[in-house]
Length: 342
Image (cartoon, rainbow, N blue to C red; front, side, top):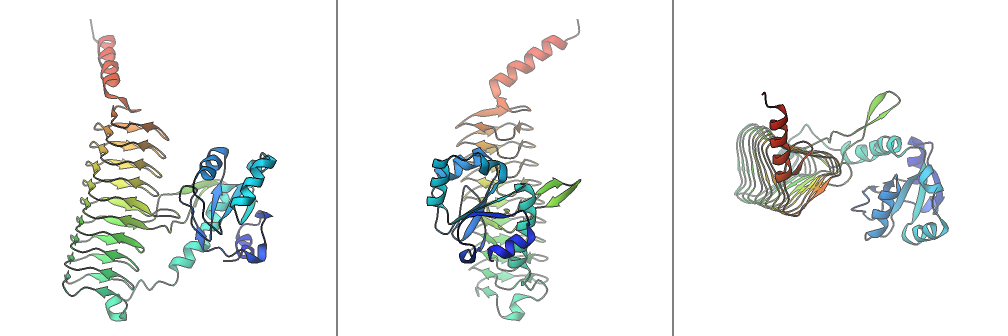
């Protein structure tokens, strides 16, 4: 996509440096995982500091708010010119995110054939040892590995991959651009890769941020019945190997779940949450957006971790807002004493 095409859907877009006719944009990425031939949104100094401290790739652009760009000093601007191919500004990152994500979503999804089975089209690659029941839909470009079992009612949508030995129980739905590793077990009525719940409130309405990042799930992951793993906005939602997720759980868009985590029944993590390895989420617990639980941290049942909170490693948390278990127990004991009837 050319810069002029992007500007046609976001009139406030204003190029600050770079050669407009040489800008070729393949997609959008995120400050934490910038990709070649993409651009990232930078809306405040916190994002800018994090972005500049990471490893940047070639042919990368950025879109700032006008307000943030005006605060840059000469040294910061010089550094940005050294590291970026181009930089532009907009009045509102939130508005631009809604406007700019739609054409990239359309570019990725509009050409997919979601109605004809990939086996009929000759585009699905299915290992001869895979066992596929009746009443299963397999989309174009799907790859099914050796010894996979797919039970009745499953839908595997375009350009997804199912690793060797994985089992999909009845009525599992896999959205496009999902990658499942080997020896996974996905139980009935679970959905992987549906749109992330991302909206920006603009002009009195909730405007959609279009999600096209997909989902990547590594080997030996088990996900219970009636659970959901949402697609990332611009880069994949990620679940690492050995993690176990119970029934009625949610992993929201852009979240990253480490190795050998345990997420118990009705627990959920909101968007952009990071769980490092061996984290345990008790039944009914949750993490608000942007929370980060470091290796070995545990959240007791019904505990709720606050937005952008960082805990661990090996913290043991309880309550709402979640805090160290011993502190929470002391607080509960004090409340019981104060409220006890005489």
